[in-house]
Image (cartoon, rainbow, N blue to C red; front, side, top):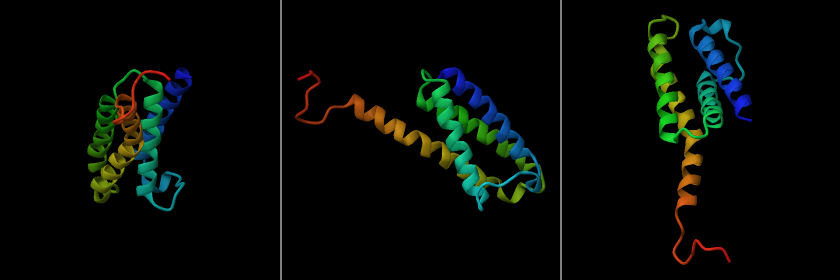
Length: 123
């Protein structure tokens, strides 16, 4: 499973990089909004990254994928056809990262804590 996730991660990084650097007319669109596409791309990238590196902490995963998004935004800032949307696209990328990691963080917090009245011993 990890090998498949790593292969998907490599494919996702290449696809996102090519889509981010290509002119908008050369990129096929799945949704009617490019902002939704940014959110979905980084949502999937974060999920595949979590599957590919299961022992990597979630905060480190957020940092690595966030740095990748920031790196692409900086490069896109120099392209005249991407310049007006760089900040909004970066915010959509970050929203996709957090949309993928918040349920994972909540589940980890839930499994670490016990509610009042509950015990950790099996019944």
